[in-house]
Amino acid sequence: MSERSKEHPVQETIQVTMEAIRGMVDANTIIGQPIQCSGDTTVIPISKVSFGFGSGGSDLPTKVAKDMFGGGGGAGVSITPVAFLVISPGDVKLMQLSVNAATPNAIINMVPDVMDKITGFLAGKQAKKEAAEPGIEVVES
Image (cartoon, rainbow, N blue to C red):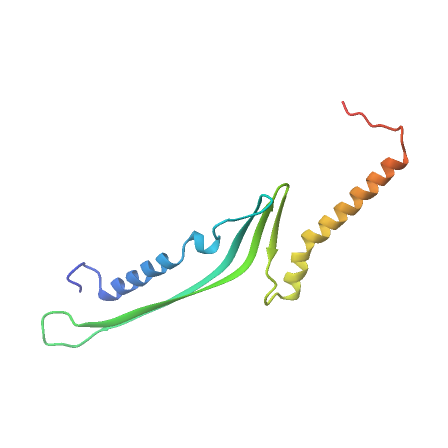
């Protein structure tokens, strides 16, 4: 047992490793700091964070009354940008990076753009229809 606490040294090693990971990965790592652009546009980077750690140790045989322990730990972090949230006046878009995008994901990512085009097409068609029928006005109460 450790002289500093009542925990086994392996537990201490794991706790130190986890504290180091917490220091590397926080909310600002996943959702980045907003970037102000011209025209009142804000871009926010979004990343995927993967991490792993390993830790272990062993009590060594000894004739001394003091505990003998050998152990260690390590951690790794991978940060991959996956998208940008683009906020402009009257519009918010999620622009995903298409690196390693599978076909189903690519189709799902295209849905918002297709919906915007359909909405724009229908709005344009409605405006042409209203322009072709002058004198008819709908009044809501």
